[in-house]
Each structure stands twice: as C-alpha cells, then as structure tokens.
Length: 239
Image (cartoon, rainbow, N blue to C red; front, side, top):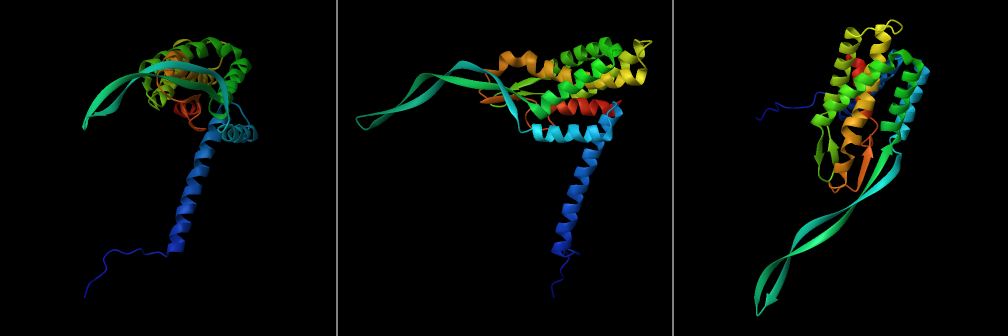
C-alpha cells in the first residue's frame, strides 16, 4: 500500500484566494510605504495619493524629445555556389540605427517637478541640495554601464544610498541656521536621488546611447518605479 506523503492541506479555491489576498496585501503595503514617504517631505495624504496615481498613469506616457542616428558597420555572410561548391563570402554592410530619446511622465517628469517644488518651498536648502545632486551624479556616472540593445544600466541601490549618505553627511557637516536639519535632509536626499540619477545615469551618457542599437531610450520609462522615481523614494526611507 502506497502512502501519499505530499499533499495540499487546503482546497484549490482557498489556495487561490490566499495567493490573491497576499498579492493585494503586499501591493497595498508597498503603496502605503510610498505614500508615507511623500508625507514625510510635507505632502498631505491626499496629495501623496494623487502623486502616486499620476505616477501610475504617467508611466505609460513617453514624450519623445529627439532622435539619434548612427551608422554601424556589420559583417554578414553571403554564400555563393559555383560548380557545385559553396563558398562563404563575408560582405561588409553599413546599417543605419535610429534611437528615439523620450522622457517618461510618471518615472521622470513628476519626480523632477517634485524636486523643483521642494527646493522652491525650502530655498534655504538649495546649496545643500545642489551639493547632494553633484555627489550623486558623480557616483552614479561612475557605476553606470551602457548595455547594447537596452540603454544605460545602473545598480538599483547605488543612487539612493549615495543620496541618503550625502544628505546625512552634508546636513551634519554644513549646518545652515535658517534651515532645520530634518527639513534640509529630506530635500537634499530626494533631490539628490532624483536629479543626481537623471544627470549621472542619463544626461551624461546621452552620447553613448546612439551606438547601443536600442530603438527607444526612455528616461525613467521602464515603468513607474524605475531608477529616477525609486532613487528619490528609497533615499527618503533611508534617512
């Protein structure tokens, strides 16, 4: 008599319900963390929810800016058959590649506007925010790598970690009398994460994109929670 050692102790219906419940629960938890991060920098819960909603909707909108064209040499094999013998003849071709540069509304435009709003709302934090952007830009540029057929890739946690550390060190080393430490720190962290990633990963590497063979290079456009959006968000959570 064979004993069944492996079996599911629940019904299939209950198991499906449990999977759906966990999926939605984690999603709401993640969105709740994002909303709390925006509340941390001075937005109301309603405004934070509106920003999240606009980011979700805007993630599907890419605004084309320009098109890069480049000529790429390609060696292709041509086969010629003569008197029953096939010869492989390499032929040199030049193909023209076109890469459209676009900016994503949800992943780039909205985070940039939030950074500008924070700096205008707290103008005393401008110098520290600019220093944070500079530091994150340099670090991000040093680790960004061009990937053929895709674009510019950056380790996901490097920009937000750099932004958070820069904000903590700058606000501790260079205190500003009319700028409270907590206020300056969140503005510096968010602006550094967003603008530093934009400059270091995207703007400083625009010259490399046209030779990567990617049909479209969308700044912040691999989805709502892409590099620029995530960098600012994670930087807020780390401080």
